[in-house]
Every structure is written in C-alpha cells, then in structure tokens.
Image 1 (cartoon, one colour):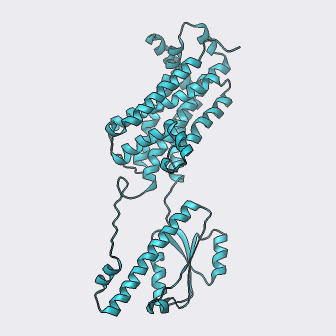
Image 2: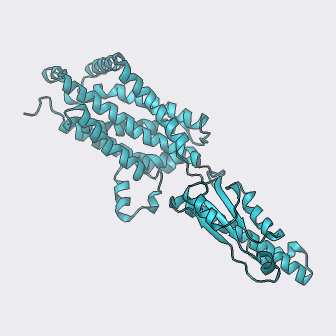
Image 3: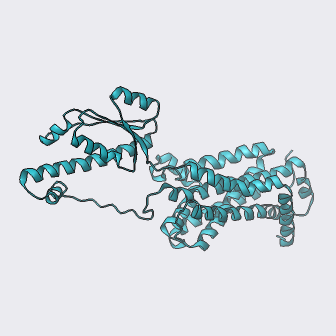
Amino acid sequence: MNFKRIRTLAYKEWRELVRDRLFFSLSILVPAILMLIFGFGLSLDVENIPLAIVDYDHSALSREYAHKFIDSRYFNFKGYSRDERTIDWMLARAEIRAALVIPKDFERSLLAGQPATVQTLLDGTFPFRTTTTKGYVRAINSAVSSEVLARYLSQAGGIPSEQALRMVRPVRLEVRYLYNQSVKSIWSLAPKLIMVILIIAPPFMTALGVVREKESGSIYNIYASTVSRGEFLVGKLAPYVGVSIFNAVVLWVMAITIFGAPFKGNPLFFFCASALYVVCTTGIGVVVSTFARTQIAAMIATAVLTVVPAVLYSGVLIPVSSLSPTTKVVAHLLPAMYFTNIVLGAFLKGVGLNVLWGNVLVLALYATGLFTIGYLLFRKRPAA
C-alpha cells in the first residue's frame, strides 16, 4: 500500500468536500443541529403532570390529603372541579392527565379507624408516563396512610407521634441513586445522542461521497489508474473520518456544556473509542456504496441500516435487558449497543478501558469486518 497515493487521494477528497460548500456545511452543522433538536425535544422525565381534584368532603383531612399532591413537584395543580363529568371532559380534551376524586365522609371514616377509598383517574394514552404517574400516586397515598395511622395510634395510645410513626413503618427503605444522583433523563440521553448521531451522519457522508463519483463518472479515473482498492478506500474515507471525529468532539462539548451531563471518565479513552466507533460506522457507508448506484438508493439503504437500529436496539429508549430474546440477539449483532455502553460508562460511571475493553474489542472487530467486506465488494471495474 502506497501511503503517498493515499495522502494524495485524501487531499483530493478533502478539496472536493470543501469545494461543495453546502455538503461541507451540512456535514458540520447537521450533527450539532440534531443534538439540539433531540436534546431539547426528547425527555423521559415525568413531572408537572396536569392534575385536577374533586373534593366532595370539604374537610380538613381531605384538604390536607389534596395538598400532598398539590405541593408535589410531580404534579401541576389545575384547580378543583365540581364533579366527575367535568373531570371526564378535561381528560378527553387533554387539559389534565390525572384526577383525584375524594368521596364524602372521607374524614369521618379515617377518624373512625375505617379505610377511605379515593378514586384516581389517569390518562392512559402514554403507557410509560401513566405507569410512572401511578407510582407517584401510590407513593404519596402510602405516605399519607402512614401519617394518618400514626396519628390515630398516637391519640389512642397516648404515645409520641414519632414513636407511633416508627411503629407503623417498622421497615425503613432508603434509596441511593448511583451514577445519576439527580435522576435526570437528559444526563443519560445526551451521551446516548452522541451514539445515535455518530451512527447516522458518517455513513451518510461516506456512502454519498463514493456514490456521487459513480453518478458523475469521475470514478472511472480510479478504475483506469494504478491505485489499488485498499488505497482508494483509505484515501477516500480519511476526510470523512476526520470530519466525523471533529463532530464527536463538538457533540461531547455540547453534552457537557449545554445539557449539563457530567463527564467522569478519561477524555483520551473516550475520544479514542469514539474514533474507533466512527471508523466502524463509516464502514457501513463503505458497504452501502459498493452496491448502491444512485445517491437516493444510498440514502435509503443507509437510513434503514443505521437509524432504526440506533433508536430501537441500542438501549437509547428501551434498556436492552428489557427486550425480548429475539431482539436482544439483534441488539448484540449491532455496534450501537456497544458504544452506548461506552458513552454511559465514560460519562456517568467514570470507568475506562479496564471495564469497557470488551465493548472496544467488539467495535474493533466490527470496523475490521466492515472494511474487509467493503474491500472485497469494491471492484475497479464496473459490473456489466
């Protein structure tokens, strides 16, 4: 392999990339724009849930119970309603997502030591949000029940309220969140978005760069030259790999500065792993460019091979451990999942090569395999 010819081809491709100002601008701006769009538009935090309350009891205890929800940061109180018909209308119009109906004799039942039933209505159009909201309601209701029971025992037995509260809560659960102490979804999503964007942009640029030469006919100059297949592929792809590595740095800075994601790992390890991932995703573009003859076909094929796997089978929205056995196999056959483990480990856990070496090894094997396939499929003579 002649490195002088590789350098010449890389310089030629770089000049062509810079000369096409629109394509060059898009290759730099689109990843950053996607980071902003997904970063600000995608959130898994369930907070400020619109809530309305129907209070038929109008007692001190019913108001105290209602204020447990009103004062919670998870609910956005929209006001009291007269009856259930108003609640149904507000739910249908999506003005609220949750409602409480406190029955008559709520206070009387509790003071008599009898259970009181409170109805909760939740908008189930978004199951994930509904399940989370249900958990909030259960947690608040459990806390209120313990407080009411402790108050009853304190008054009936003449014991201090703190002792009564310990009696009704014999087991105390303390939860400690590791790696993401604030439990902010953006701290997890921002690193994952780096993975998503770097599996979309590099293959698109690579595939279009090669297929564009096929459409224009300039690739026949390569067919007629003494440049080998390996020299052509390395020289052709070097500028796109360089631009993608630059984009990886920009996305890393955006994740830290704009979205506030903490980075606890080794920057050198992260950038080396990102460069390997970029080489791997660029290899997808190489394979696509070997059989696609038009830029439209290259775009469609690249989208199918990158966008869907990056979103569904990488752990961005659904943890891989929660997938079905079949889809788990698919996830392990794609490079996105392995780089997701790397970015989460580097950002939130602060681990490096000593822990993530297996994921790095898989990415290296992917990169080698994809470029080998591209090398074998590329011919210096067009197919008849």
